[in-house]
Length: 380
Image (cartoon, rainbow, N blue to C red; front, side, top):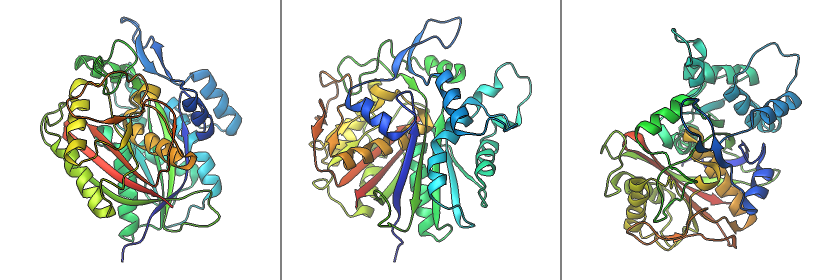
């Protein structure tokens, strides 16, 4: 019999706040982190969702020992801050995994360098975090484009169920850099205004940055404030194009289908979909087709990209956390900036804060290279 796995704790560091409570208050008020940022000197300002570096350093100095001689990059500070409250509450043993989700890691270290610095390797970044908190196992890195955050939860669940570990800390983080902006700009994928997922007038993404952390265990203790069972997961690559998703939504459809079969839930039982919703022409259209093929067109759905931008490897984990907080608070958050349906298949886009009883959550993600992932969570 499979071990049941539960998420019993989480935290996040974003432009809207340095913990879940402050983020939730900002979301309820309809606040967004998306604003104009001058990222590349030679180019115009972009709409992006960035963390104030001064506030980040202030918070890091408040939480961590100022006398520590070890230097940390900006991204490492974000990751350490997101992780600290969880490590204080849950023991790290010889059977505890650390799983890091990131797409670019410390890519900013490459600027003006002729040789590769050690810290730019994702394995080195993961090990630095592991060493800081005293993990006894070798850290695992999940770096699969923009599905990484959702896949990291699935990796933790499957490794615990296989008996490799008893529990796991999953952390995720990416930051806004010139490299990332230049890359998305070369695809002409960056929007000229705050992004509008699923909207008729959408014209591209806003890059965001965040760090997030969850604790996953086989024990749903009564001492925990909450617990969410990870019921099912799947990841399928549609092998369509290096950056364009399958027009028929095959990979996402298959991922959702498999995750729901494992979870043993029907379309009628899903209470809420936390979708990927990047506000690019093809992604949003593909998602609407995949959801329609699964008969999920009537389920309340949102994208968090209008609040946080696209946080790459952190987006899936951050959005999973916000979806769980929604279930705890019994409130659905609207899909920001949505006005008029801009996809061919009907979707039940959430337009305003609304109360709801949420038991089963479907979280999806899609990314470059044709990757797609889905998980089903159950509020216990």
